[in-house]
Length: 87
Image (cartoon, rainbow, N blue to C red):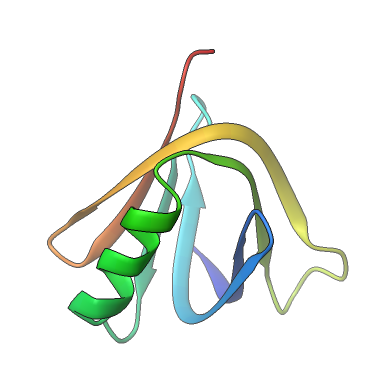
């Protein structure tokens, strides 16, 4: 898994330190070093039920890695799972 330092959900920026991977079906899995607080998770869920663009800052890669959506997401045991929606 690659390292992540920042995550952009459309225009919203989150400082998340941890690891991430992108599956063949474009599902993005992020494992934060520290879990998101319940307040932060609820705020994201309420304001971003559908995400049109995800950008990831990997310290080893100069430009941001960009994944066009739409995406929906959920939290499973502290891990964030962004699933690409069919539109």
